[in-house]
Image (cartoon, rainbow, N blue to C red; front, side, top):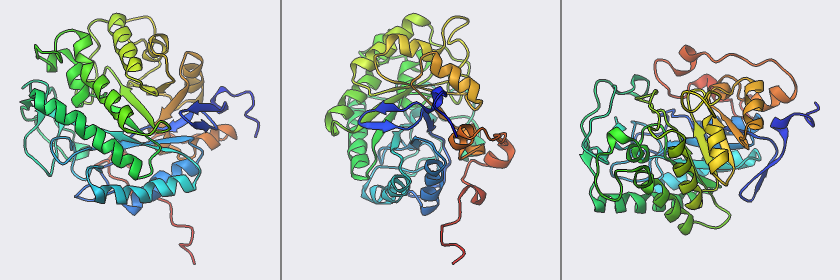
Length: 371
């Protein structure tokens, strides 16, 4: 195995961690926690297999930060109380035993919540019903309910609860957190023009619409240790509106990436259905724009299962890449690529249907299973 000439296997610094390659596990909603949001032993084994397969860092599925409005799906893991912390320690210990760092993605679903054990009410920047319908593979059906517009006190509470969740992530032995500002969830709802009809400091121009994401980042950074990584995920597309694009084009991208860098993000994780295509009708990709206007490492995600696409994305400005479908089909993707072994194709029907819950076939048997 000779990877010395393969850009994917360069070592890269992320915070205080030196990663042995550029390939990480992307966050993927798998709705496999207990009903009260505790990570399970099955989840610990699920995540550990990716570390064992050569992924140099892992980002968890979206994890709800509070016992209020943030939960998005039934059986979604949380990091909202001490029981959640204790359960996540099993996962972080299992991943660390395999030699990889793991980052908790903190996700507030906002108006896209379709399963919340704490409340039937949805919180959003404005009282705008989301486009599209709830996701059946995550247990939903029909239209989304109309949410309640957040007050200034609600916004302050959201920030405080992201901070408290990050502090619990430190207690759970995570190596960092990723603030989920993408894919149509609450922070992205503030950034999106048609879901944000506010006329205060959180609405109107793009500087105001990115404000909440930046304030969450700043507050989380201030509350966590210096060596603790605090990143942010950003996209234009959404789970319920894949075609949305920032109306200001590259001008919006400049404001967004510069503001998130100024907010002390340790990395920018950009994601689209296909991150190799132009961010707008033509011109640079979202990865290239993040590299151009940000001043921190860029992680790229979306349609990078092919090693050549991954290499080209790194060459175009990404410091790291993350895989979702490619990882589900090949939990040892980095090892396979390093050894020039064939990659399996992703089978959506087999892995994510009729729902996205972790299947028994995805979880390796314990080492002493035959004893």
